[in-house]
Image 1 (cartoon, helix red, strand yellow):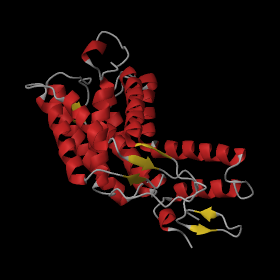
Image 2 (image 1 turned 90 degrees about the horizontal axis):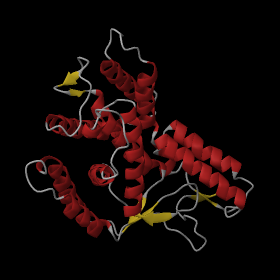
Image 3 (image 1 turned 180 degrees about the vertical axis):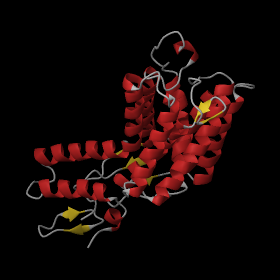
Length: 310
């Protein structure tokens, strides 16, 4: 019988878990081999969680390297069509659930609204070619925000996330709304990003995230997880701007590294992402962990060892 956790997974995700179980069938959960396999499973699950964003980034880079300048279809329009195709394929092949799709659409809408404002005030710009656009914003831009949303919902499911001392959701919602509003108002009023950063630290400082790689439930401060995700988004942003997906003002005369100060912006954007996801997947306590570090929820196999996800 499949566990509740396994039933929530897509076929590919169940295959990753089953492969780990098969490889570790005759190994001690605390042995070197088990540790190595668990590390590889962690990498595989993280890669799968990033699949939408990685596919979109690959298309952006490919368009920079190989898309002909004199093509009848503008490059931005081709990127929009490719992004829609990726989304359709993932839903049609059940690599993405309908519940996730609604979250991604919400990310797409909130991101596009911010894009319209930010390009209007000159925070960044896009090439002017193409018909699939709203004002100066090509429609593929919203999919970049959707990629963040896709990662957030996938990682929540893939790692069976649990939280201790998670703040009340209404408090996190207030912080998220304030962050989103500040992205607009700081152009005409005071920039409160540092005040909001302090608020984020105060609200989420006690929170610890527990995540299941295979059997054990490692944990880390949630603020550290926020920071790591923001760092990887910033690295992806550097690749995307190099590929000409968009340009910051200091990149118009030639590409250069995106300012590290953008890490703060991405960190704050992460809070909006997390809060949106928690209204679809409410934070829950972690599975009970026994004295040997094994999650006790699930079932035991013929050797008496704890198994999660079958």
